[in-house]
Every structure is written in C-alpha cells, then in structure tokens.
Image (cartoon, rainbow, N blue to C red; front, side):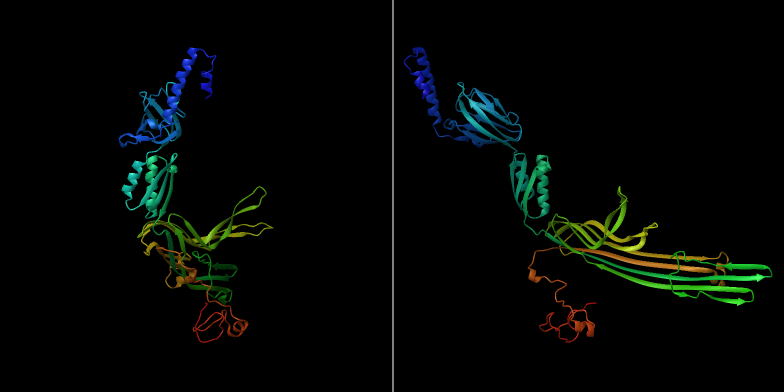
Length: 491
C-alpha cells in the first residue's frame, strides 16, 4: 500500500501518476491471478510432460521428481522471459519458447528453478529432486524373483532394498542386480528380511584309528684274546638306526664266555611293541546363514619368536585341540552351502625343537604339533551327511645293521646284525552333517552335569566311589540309597 500512497500524492506530475497507475493495475492483475487455486497436471499422463495450469501460479513453491539423465517438459500458461536454476550441475534448463522449458537431470541431488516474466516478477518456484529412475530395476526384480516382495527406493545417490525374500541367496542376488544397475555396490543398502530358516547347526565327526608295531632284535659281541705277546680285541656295536636306540624289552648284557686268556662277552636286546590309538572328536557349532562361527576346545602353548630391544624373549601362543570354523549359506529349504575348516591337533615330541641353554638358563623344548586338518566348500541338504575327508595310510620301515660279510652268513650271521622294524597304520574319516534348527525351550535341554552328585566321605572311603548313586524310581542326586547297579557311571 505504500507504493499506491506514493503514486497518489498531490505533488506528483500527471505523467508520473499515469505510469504509476498503469504499474499498479499490472500488479493488481498479478495478485488476482495468484489468488486462484493451484494445480499441476501431466499432459496425456506422461510424467515427463508437466503442464502448469493458470490456477497454479500462486507464487508458492511446487515440487517434482526428475529422473537422472532424463528430461521433463515444463509448459506455462503465461509467458516467461527468464529461468534461473540454483545449481546448474544438478539440473540444466533449456528455454525453447516463452511458455515451454526443458529440464534435464544432470546429477543426483536437489535444486530449484525460478520462472520470471518480462517485468521481473516470479511466476513459479519449482523444487526439483533428481533421482535415479528405478522403474527398470523394479521390473527386473519382479521378473527374477516372482515369489518375493522387494521394494526399491532411492535415497540421494543410494538405493534401498526392503521387503522379504525366501532365503539369503535371493537377498544376495537382489543386491548384486541393484549394484550392477547403479554401478556401485557400496551404494546399495539391503534391508531385506529372510522368510526361511537361517540358523544352521553343523555336526562334525572326526574318527581316527592308529595301529603301530615295533620290533627290535640285536646282538652285540665283544672278545679279547692274547697269543703270546700279541693281544686282540674285537667288538660289534650294532645300533637300531630306525628308532635311534633300544626302546627296552629283553636285555642280556653281561653274559659271556671265558677260557684262559680268551674272553667273549655278548649282549642280546629284543623288543616287540604293539600300540593302538583311538581318536574321536565331535564338535558342534551353530551360526546364522552368511555369518562365520569358530570353535576351539584345547589350549595354547608359547613359542619364542624373537627378542625385544631389552633382550627379553617375545612369545607367541599357538592354539591346539579340536577346532571348527564354518560359514553356512542357506540356498533354499533343501540346500545348504558350507565353507568348512576343521582341525584336530595335539602336542607331541615328534618334530620338537630344543633351544640350547646357557650356564644360568636351562634349555627349553618347544613341542611339535600332530595335526589332522581339512578345509573345503560343499553343499548338503539339511540332515544329510558326507565324508569331507578320509585318509588311509600304511607305512612299513625295516632296517638291518651289521658287520659286512658276517651278517650275511646263514644262521651264524644273526650274531653279527641287528634288526629294527616299524609298521604304522592310520585310518582317518571326517564326516559333516548340517541341520536347519530353531530355538527351543531351556527346559528341554540337558547338560552333561545334570544328575551328578559328589560322593559323601563315607561312600568315598568305604565304597571307593567318586560320585553318589541313586535308585531309578523317583531317584535324585541327593538320594544316597544303594539299590543296585543303576544311575550314572563315571569311568
């Protein structure tokens, strides 16, 4: 109203008053046009052809979504002489006529465009959001996963996948398709939920039988005789080169024959050893589909690796025992892909390393590891088993040491040779079985310590028991009655 007051002042010249009245009339027309209700219509149902109705020029801001690397046609009901885009790097505007303008999405982001008439007055403020056109991606996901419900939304330069799929494999494939569509896997956020079971329990059985036979038979002779002033001494020292030394058994050292100046001593060493080793390990581990799980039942032993600047020994701990590491992926209800690594190791003196000591520090022996390890990737149904690894080994070693020539004499050659024989057989089998599992009630689970009760002093002293025994009828760990060989047996 201040403009009209300046125009109608009495001291204003007539020409200036006429110009002011004309300008006021134009402003009143613009105000009356802006007071009409506003609508934005798409011509012929085409989202890229936007027609601004005359009633839409209210002076307020209106918004639209523009596809990346796509164009939209903006048609105005009045003539526009100038178009201003706040960020030309996101949207480029091309004015074809006074009423038609092309908007081109150059980059993902948000900006706005102002339209002005020849008087410099604002006709329209258009808020523009440039996003990727995900219609082709939605169509592809519906085609490749008809049984799934996948929603696709754009968030700046990122794509968000939501909804549900049957299994984890479909979720990974949907994410890969979206990544290839936009060209960057890091810009895809997957919020897909899995409808099927995801928890996998893996049961691994490691069974091994070892049988070994060792036989040692050796005879050592030593003789001393004198003929006049001539003295003669002969001795055989046959070692067991395979084992390194005599392991024990029968030893007749010290027996011999003496006649005059002739003395013959003999030593007989004989050993036969049979050994049997049984190894059974059954580690069980549960993990969610697509995640890794590790298990170790054993320990760690120190190994010196270096010295620091002060001369202190730096130790590194090496694990040993029963270990299991696996990553399951549920392909479908009947298919489970497994990446498994299992190991059974134990400390042994074979392959050990001895660090020499000093005058003040005693020597140290670093033990070796006897390892049975298997790593593989396989596919199994729930409840199905397969032999992941197997080993059948049969080794035979036989050494004969003796005096050249004499050891080959029939019968009597036995006195001049030693025999060292070793045979070992090993049979190893690793079986894996995956299961799709669900959580259960805590009351349905049993612990190995359930039902155990320590023996009383009387049972321990008089009966020699380590645990209490109880009856089968209404029995409990606190029931100390002896009613026969029932209850838990601890070996």
